[in-house]
Length: 289
Image (cartoon, rainbow, N blue to C red; front, side, top):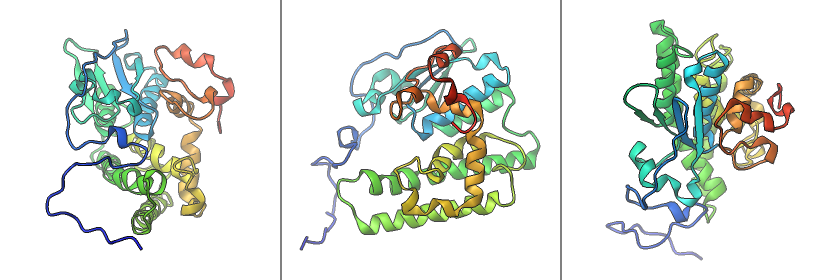
């Protein structure tokens, strides 16, 4: 029988945490090595990876381009978090928190750094006047759901995802605790989407772009292979909404950018021109792909 763990009076970092990301976990911030970031020719320079948080930014940029906003042209550079790229000095200069995505807006006389995925969505929405309503009530609703996602993501990703998929030891209490909270969040979404086409109302907004990569992926069984475990099919309104968003060509393109897993035809490890997508199979950009 394993002895019960008793927390020490003062926690110290004296061993690796174990699990998939043990080599990059540490209790201190700052760079571990010098490395300048590349800079392309477009106004927006994105440094990211095709995780749900990274997909938020690439979907937003692709949606803006689809509306004809040429100023949203971007270079998407791959940040390999498994190799510790996020701890390079250049990346830390943009995001002191060493998390993807990070954006440098070079459209003006002085570059502007933007980190945290929610902040990137708001920055771009306000810059281009798109996907964030100006009506005070609608704006408040949109921002409320956007920040609901920002606040809930640690429970879904760092909580359920970690203990269910990545932790070196399966802990029943931890999995039960975070599975319960994840299902509660799915129920929150299901109840909202029973009365609303999109998260903030009848219009597609940054709230949908923020929530879909996480909860849309979860609803379709794309995250942690947990669909059956969480009975995701029972959330009919979330399923309807997830399919609706997935049909958008800009969403399909955004999901491909900086992606490093799955079918090779679904990966566009770096994106520097719109024509980069032409090297991929055409059916990936069709409804339902």
